[in-house]
Length: 146
Image 1 (cartoon, rainbow, N blue to C red):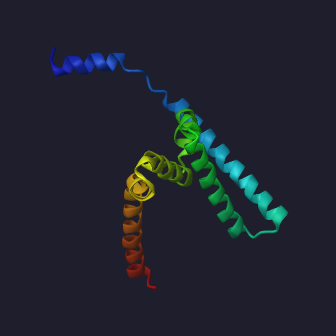
Image 2 (cartoon, rainbow, N blue to C red):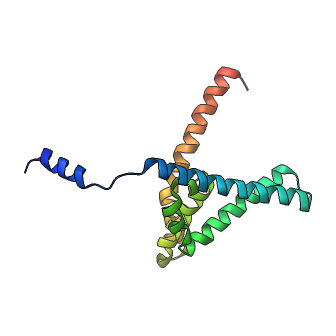
Image 3 (cartoon, one colour):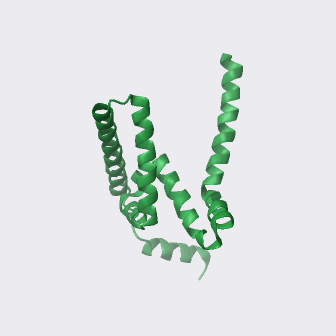
């Protein structure tokens, strides 16, 4: 058997991808998460008489906390398998990556385990995010002034 035959056979037996279905599930789950967060934020603003900026900060921290707790309990990964990319909006996906890496390193102790493993996955995101923000900020400064 040559490489071309192997590719044909594997292609024939590969499971079919359900792109439309996966996109709809991700859209609905991400939209539901965002809508619930928006409703809770509006409730916080109304009932606690807090301005929009403070309520937004409270919701962001709440989503991070809930994601970290659900990751620690093993629930978030199961939800993510069913909901797909809809749950990996930047805040919850980032919290999940930090928490899961920290949990992997807990047996090595708080410094060399949790502390050093926590940013193993998220470190590259932070590094390139900060570097690109600097570059684009500098370009904006050159084009439009201070």
